Length: 142
Length: 150
Image (cartoon, rainbow over all chains, first blue to last red; front, side):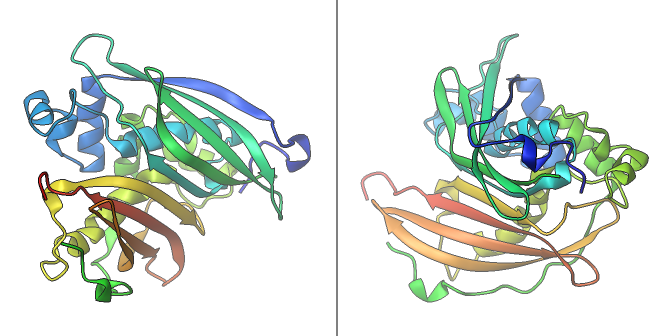
């Protein structure tokens, strides 16, 4: 593994470049196909409302996949991620318009660990709601 | 009704191997809008020390969740599948999943809890390659919401 960030160059509090990820209905249809998760709450508004949701919601695993890009874009090598975990706290609601929703992700180094590893804590929000909780990754730096 | 605690620790037989293809990885990376060349260009992956293109970190979920289906639908456990939502997800990697892997999953019920009328089941999926080497372990916490009026 060859992360482009050196352990010696980071400290607790170092911020990773934040990113915004747009999500539309087309994004969700595409993710459903690629992931094999065809639960209709992610593409069928009538069904989503029937089961008590405000509208179609993004796959939690889609949000999880987007959030870690802040880390993998930082390290360059996605293989540098040695642990990654999240809690799904609020759904990302995706309206049927030309805008959809946006997932905003920021992250910072929360702890320096042994063997040139660091713990990165992530914050993911959409429409002002925190959509992931306890969102952290352990990353192998160079 | 609370789930049977005697299922904690129960392990299910290994799944038939899932063969990871380059084009499936490309499709997944495109679906999450990620243009990291390690996912699509074997030379870029090699430059990072990987023998083949690798998959994004959450790709493994498609394989482990399919495997967890045996647990979720085990009629002896009796989880109300229609009321299940995904609570937490965690991965611990020995190495990234890569094209050409033939991956098999062993699922184990790690814990069963009852919280405010909800059944909370954590399934651990251990993923090994064709040589028996460990690739990734996935922990999936599923919450079966209490039935209304129950």
